[in-house]
Every structure is written in C-alpha cells, then in structure tokens.
Image (cartoon, rainbow, N blue to C red; front, side):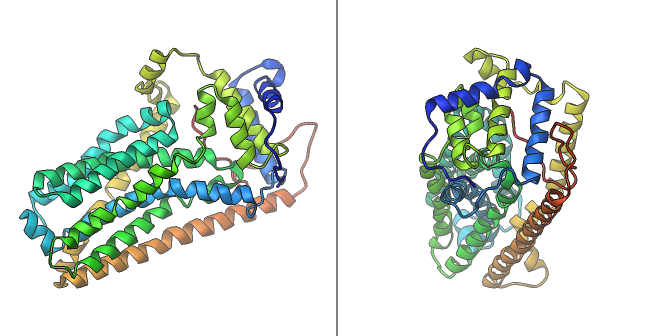
Length: 416
C-alpha cells in the first residue's frame, strides 16, 4: 500500500475529478460504468491495488467501522432481550402479564409494526441528510425507547417504548449497512462487510447474559437494569458519528466531490492506487448521469418508488427481495427469539434460572455458524482471487476483466 504522507492538494484533486468526469472523450454512458466495473475487477485480481491491512489508515478504518457495526449490536441486544425478560416473574407480576397471550403478543408485535413503518422513513432520511444522520436519528429513537422502557410504570408506557425501539432500530440498521458498503474499499468489501451482521450476536449474547445475571434480584431491577443497559450501543454510535467521515458517495451526490475524493484516497489506498482512482471515476460518472434536480424535486424523488416496478428487470429484482423477506420472516426466528423460554417450559424446564441460562447458552452457540461461515467464505474468495491473479493474462491493448466466478466483484454500490 502506498503510504500517504500528506493530503493531496486541491489542484491535484480537481485534476483527478475533472479527468474522472470526462472519460472516453466526454462520452457519459452506462457502458462507461460497466467498463469501470470490469477494470476494478481486473485491478483487484492482478494486485494492482494492494492494501496493507496493518497500516495506520487500515486501523483507522477498522475503528470507524466499529461504530457502524455497533448498530447491529443494538439490534441484537433488543432482539434477544424481551424473550428473556418475558420469562421473569418480576416483569410479569409488575405489568400483570402472562408469558403468552394477547397482551404479551401485542408488546412484541408493536416492535415489528414500528419497524415496518420506519422502513418508509429510513431511506429518505439517509439519502437527504446523510448516512451518519441516518444512524444518529435511529439512535435518538432507540435511546428514548430504552429510557422509557426502563422507567415505565404502566403497561401503556412500556408499549410506547417498544414502538420507539422498533422505529429507532430499523433506522439504525437501514443506514449502517449502506455506510459500511460505501466506506470500505472494494478489495475488502466482502471481508469486512461480511462481519457486520455477526455483530448482532455481540448484542444477543450480552442481553441474554445480563438478564440471566440480574434474574437473581427480587425487585423490578431484575428487568429494569437490562433495559437500561440497552442505551450503551446507540449512545456510542450517536457520539461516534460526529467524528467519523461521511460516505464519499453521499458527499459526491451533494456536490462535494473534492471531499469525497479525499476520503477515498485516505482510506482506499492513496493517490497511486488503481482501484481508488477508478472509484472516483465511477462516482463522478454517477453524478454526471444523475438528472439535476431542484430541492423540491429531490425530496419528492425520495418517496418515488416507481423505479422498483418500471421495467421487467426491476420487477424481477423487487419480487426476489420480497420473497427472500417473506422466507426469512417465516423461518421462525422471531418466534424462537421471543418465546424460547416458553418452548423450554413445554419440554419440562420449569426453573426460570435454568430457562434463562439455556437461552444464554443458545445465543453463544448461535454465534458460531455465522463467524465460521464468514471466515470460510473470505478464505475461499481470497484463494480463488490469488489463483486467478497468478494465471497468465492475455491482453490485446485493453484490460480484460477476469472471470467473475473466481474473482470477487465489488459489492453493488447504491447510486447517490
């Protein structure tokens, strides 16, 4: 990796951006974007874009990603918390609830209902105000919900807290993956991005472990303390977002191409890195291809979902995503998460402490497959990428992209 000893000058950035926005004799087309994507794959496969994972810039990037990953921790914490709390007699006696029933089901479903509503707001917020604001706005709702839940004196207050938490968590988990994808260099996007969802289990394990530990208290502290500790991940994310860089793609979409180029050069390998230069070209092309809009048109466009259905390929992709969503929802994860202690009681586990301990152990065991699968997949991709790069390349005056089945292509990057 080329070490950066100083920030590129404004003139250097302007020259790069100008050149990037005028490739192929100023012909801006989708074919040009496709050509850039092929060049990125070729550069990665032939090690024209080596990045040093032990450099100062790399460790700074890891630290930045930690704040984004903690959004998944927030989701895991809340997603596993209520199932354990619902088994505690201290909680059920205070709110006069049963472990199952319509009132208990309503407490759970309010979280999911709020998440569905939040989906309509997550995209517009992060597209208009930025990825960091998207995460921070979610953190504010999550913090408010956690405080209200831990201090609730009535069941309606507790139900309101569940709604706030569901709304906040979805805003966090919509903005964070987009930020992660856009801030990570293409060479590492699969490796580092793959660990985002694994941070869900850091929250899950912590939540179930804390509930098991506090279940020995006979007062309401048994369930109030775990709910209060839920503020820690979103608080860290909210503060951290003031210090991490904004997504370069969002900056470019808001006519801050010079700032976007600085971020890409700083964290994606430097001015001499081929992929970093290609990224700037691609982003500049996207900005050129975007139709100029007035502020009013831009805001209305945030709520325009016709692009999901205006062509055969768009309808196909929308249908596939919808089917995957339904399939994951019907897999039984929510039922198992919310009612695992109840299911344990059905097979003869009657002790509350024993049920909470088994739930805690289940969270730990559930962590193994995602981490193992992610690590094995990363090693598989790296092996085939190295195998492809060591093979003789045939060139006829232009760069030919390696076969996409053996070389990790960059993850799809959303248009600004």
